[in-house]
Image (cartoon, rainbow, N blue to C red; front, side, top):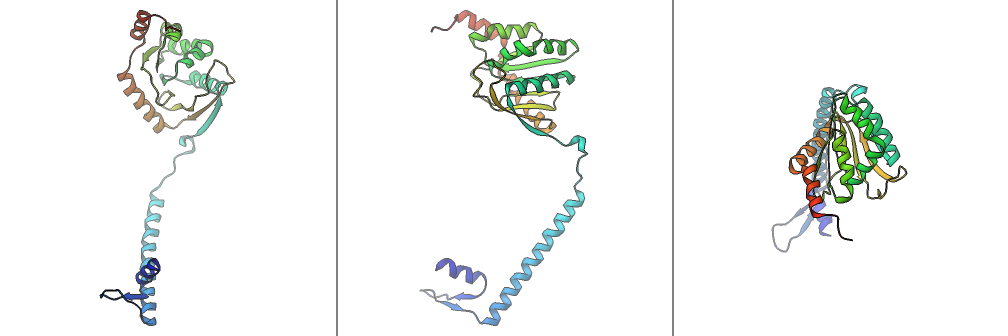
Length: 230
């Protein structure tokens, strides 16, 4: 009842008294209709203003050429991610950076490292960050010997991604099912050529790079501790 009366008051059809208890009285029909008409006219004027604003925005908006429109797609297997990565690396010119789980370095050693060497040989730069643990020491050293720059971030659990030449990105949505080195392993990875998103990931990378330590320093720490006790 209270909500209904409040609605009628807002529409100008009911008038509350100033006394207590409050008494609600119906407004004269002509007065109520006039109030409704004025309210409708006010709403129409506001709609016209919004319409003009939208028209102005539409005129000012310029769509980007088709070759600048960003594309997004989902990669669903380790094999698909590897295939796309190799294709992107072949056309890359300057640098690729990445934040990856340590198991991905094993994939790289098996399938990508020769292509990485070729990229570095033609003047490219490769940097990546991972959480280096004892079982992956040899894999990390193989990457260092290939000319890559590697940093360790202890117990890293944030976003995982690759970014090529500040444009092409592969962002892991879900790699929790990646338990072994197999191209059939299911993953969910977002691929995009959106430069704005690439810049966001690169800014994240540079922040993590400053907070992490060189891989060789981490390896020496692990060797001094010895293999973990089972």
